[in-house]
Image 1 (cartoon, rainbow, N blue to C red):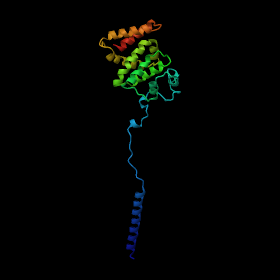
Image 2: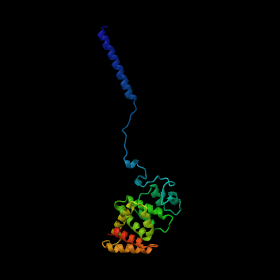
Image 3: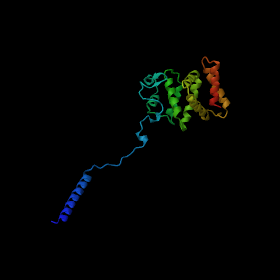
Image 4: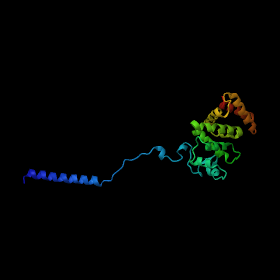
Length: 219
């Protein structure tokens, strides 16, 4: 055989084997479907809306007003909605359940009140839109009913951010709670009178704080 023809024959054979191997590899290779990337909302945990709350969701570790969360949620009188708020199963919104939960902040139960106050404060922290209509009234009613406790709670935050959040919530509440919201002097008078009546051992300094609080809420 001509050497050139022999060389060409070898090349053709090798090429055929390579093609066959390539086709075999393609045939036996697993079929990979396109990956489907889910939106973050579908991948997020149930309590994603609680980002910034500083929770571990271990009730033996998390604490509210110096007590572990178990102190509150193990109480048979604790609202199931409040428990679900802590775990993230219940997110406050434009619904009757939210209104009922936030109203608990004025309970006479000294044991559970800090837990309900925490629920209200965190709701104020995330409020926007329609949710804002639910926080102002209970915030004001809490300050009116427990003025000493209210200022102690406010002073715990040395930055003053919590105070401003609550004031802003109360400012909004007058738009739907009273028909005379256009008369801020009347609103201030109602607020100061109620707080001073309920203020135990209310000295001059605390009275001045009440006056300033009323002015901040209804300028």
